[in-house]
Image (cartoon, rainbow, N blue to C red):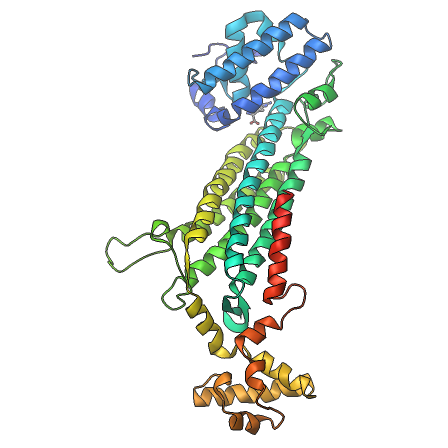
Length: 461
Ligand code: ARG
């Protein structure tokens, strides 16, 4: 156990064990060990280069830090709770190995700018990781869409049948959402990628640090402009969690649909056995647990975002210890997304699509009523009037227990004498979908084009 704290100079008593435990963040911030060491290597190199510490000391510090990194990765290091956090654990290890030389590392630096740096390095990588998984999901959506350009299904509003669309068109709606999710993360990464070291505890430092050099060594695009801001905002982390929340919201809506679609009542899809679970009591059950869990876990990511927002809202500048609470929320949101994305992608790529049931679903429920109205408009009836005529027609169809397509030509003519034999072709599901060829519409040739554009877009990521 560590006897004297690195900051213990003015203290005459040891920290109570309860406080050590309470104050310590090593339980959860140890996962930033790599970023912490990477940052320290760059800082030490800069201190040596600028003549702030002897060049040979800087070299020894860097070499030892790299050894410590290796030892951590080999599982040879046990972190100490009373060394508080990852920053002081690494520094303690360094000093235990090279003594006084190690004590020079923290020159011109505070844990406040250090933790801001570590978090930015960590989240920068996290953005890349999440984006790679989003890309895989986008590819899967395009592959599925290609197979289902002509798979007609009902589109809904209010969860009531509205107009026919295709499964490909429906899938491409999610493709668009994911495109924005990905873009948001790439923009978030750009705001993360600003180097805070040199902000010191809050007021910068008197040492002539070469901040630009450190930024360059660590692959940052710029350095922070204000030391108070550099150590005390976590907006970049909040933005990251907000982006993850939106992503999860999209996955969750899709999951909700898949749960509905795999119900007996819909039967549009069937999840693969490998992506479903059974019931301990009801032998017949096959439950879409994966989709339900993703929907459920969306709530915890929102919770993480809320934790950060509430934690930050009343904090005066600059650093406050409250901010140590950011990490568990950030890591939880990230872990949840990293868990959900691959399983979601696998689940949808293995599900069975019931084209026949989807088509039947599109045919029932008067999904082509708008097209009957449009037919009359094309024969010169004002839309408002044709809307009313078709409304009556639907009422009549309900009383006859028929679909509109099943009307005889006489039944049609009773509703409007303008209707002729070509009505059947005009309101077939294929025509309803095929004629919606406006940009953004479900017509197969449009959707083919969107898929081709999508494939090209993915190449640019
Ligand atoms: N473990 C701390 C955190 O996560 C690091 C910064 C501590 N700074 C301080 N002045 N106590 O926020």
